[in-house]
Length: 597
Image (tube, rainbow, N blue to C red; front, side, top):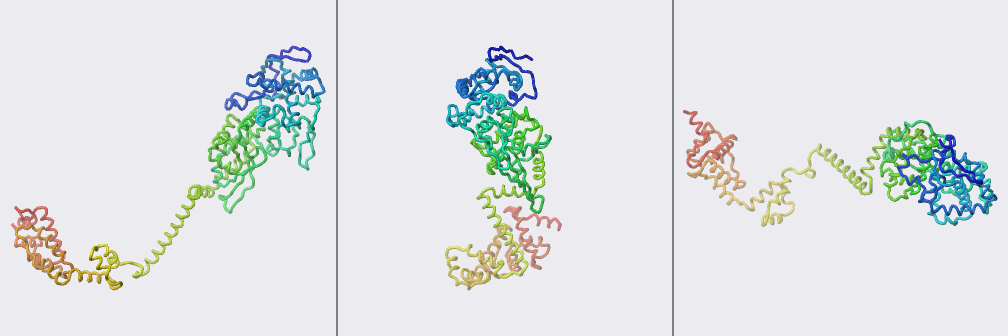
């Protein structure tokens, strides 16, 4: 531990390398730990303006030093005290100012002069901003946004109490007086320090006019944090770091959770549930502060979260909000749903950037308390019990996700209903007796298919028949045979197979096939089956007759029955396998001869 090496010269104090005595209760300005800084270094580093010792003398910020000097000189002209008196005030508060900075301080140059110039610059900047909107530094919206963001950085601070002391001591001349912050009528107007009014006016982007600024901030980061934290969330925090929401936005919406947005900053509310008869159809409404995803919002949020991690671990309201939000957001689909519900406003471009931002804000953030542990429990329980809601959401996602899918689903459902009704009607009518108007028997089916078997003159003949003159298949058969096979032709064809004779060199199967072919060519010959078989037997040779009798095991002509035609077919198959011109004796005949021997 080294004490400040100082050299008193009038009212100035020069500090080359200082490590103040550790006063833990007063430490409020820290260097952001490297574990948090490495996630996004640019969010904790000033880009335009350095305030305090941590970034003093940075080569990237030298351009603003001349502007700070001009504002310092302008403030000296405005205040009632001279420069020596102001330096004396700084020296008087030197030890306490140093006690606000945690850790080792390395500052090249006059430390107290640096604090004085920075403090006078801030006061003059705030006063000038209240008098005119178009002054030197804040002449453009981009410059104003950059200066405001740099003044909120956790490492870029000087003690707020000293700014108020310097303002009261210097008694600057004010040309335009600010009105007290507008409060609800039922609240009495609290006593406000004049510099606090200027601070609220300068950070008006974060300050809500209906919120009483009755605070005692440690610095500007602490002031902005107080602006964005409501009293309601401050009384709902409990030491329980085991509670977390296990389900994301997509799953919770499927379970019947409705997400709506709040105007209040960084707070989450769960309103009353709506129950529809069954517990599984309960719906919930979850209200969250609308999150504006902008390029500069990340820097402000990260610095406030770093402040809570180091100074307010028991009151980490902003950390609790974003920890729960990161548990709700796992994929881009979750962001899409929150944007649709108005909970998130995307000014970054792609929704993927918003999802990445929300999940990266809580990297290395430790949650010692939870402001929303009861909400997490309720959401988890609601999801696990709302089975019907989840199934309905699944059906909607699969079958009604867009207009075309929904139309196809409805059309398919209608077709299914008609099919079921048709099937029921078919089964009902099947139990009743058939009627000619309901069912087509075999004769009617033949009548309908008969035209497809005709061509040329035969088809022309069919179409010339008078309508309704033929009502059955038998009538159609008789009319067709009468037209194309008259009695004279039929008798000639019938006589051709009734005088059948086996050829001398013909094998058995050849003669049987020839006989069948002749019989088939004579349609409607009206010859009985026994007469056909006896005609074949009588026209066969003696050798073939003996072969048939042996297979029949008696004289074929004694009894011609159904089995006789089957035996002839069997002999024809055997003949195909074994008969030839040199040896016409079939195997079965040979077996019968051997048995006789």
